[in-house]
Image (cartoon, rainbow, N blue to C red; front, side, top):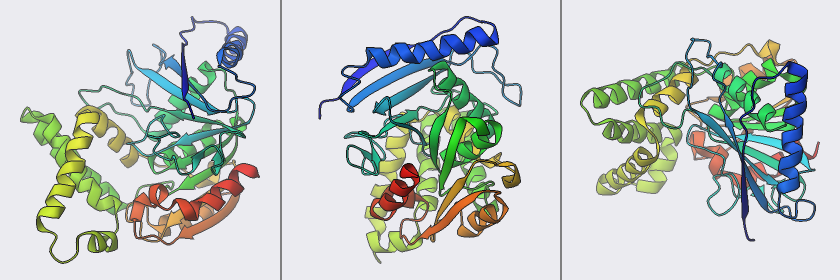
Length: 347
């Protein structure tokens, strides 16, 4: 399947609200018209760059000057619109050979691009040298601004995993009229104390390395620690056995170095800090919500997910999947998740 990529940059001047809304809707009509074979070819890929407004402010008062949110649209422009939000390492590339959810998103997959328009995005800030004080509500507001800037006033569903699920909850509370339903995978309304402690240790690693003049090394070490929290002990036992030694060192080093090349220290700390600041009141989430947990997840334990389901006004269901992959179950257990995702999208 040949991938066709187009790009559209939106930078709207300040307008009265009614005129601004009309302009935003027109922009998406133009974007759809520019798609190659948009009526018949659901394999198109289309990027839209939405600059963060100069007047935008986080709850902390922080701004994001010069930042842009890049959205990616894949699939049928007239199909169900599904916003897919992954973890802090995820981006807009959901489908295709390098897609982080390629087993579940694409032609004939659970998220079928023949039937759906899949929307992904890159979380800002993309190039932060120093951390910025943001929380998941701030990210929900940024996502909403980006969608409106691309002419998307409503999505049929949001599938949010890990950090993306936290953003999804905040989005559903703030903009309930703009989303049909929400699915959460390995995500909840608050972080667990143990997970917060792990992230605070990573924060200290990042700060020490930055002060020592080697921020990239800090990212590599913090990522190695993070890898041990994503996976379950059982998976490490099966992978490395009794004599882990060099193989374990090589495994952690590879993942740490790879991540350090892609993730600036300030961005890492910004996204991680937003997770620790996450705090939603489930009673205020009016959108019908499906909750999926993994039995070995130590970052988002099932007990917290169960608490969430008890407090949600409209819980569509609660699934606990069995997995040796811990928090990474939402990435690895594609066969188990396939029918769940299909059912969620089709409803």
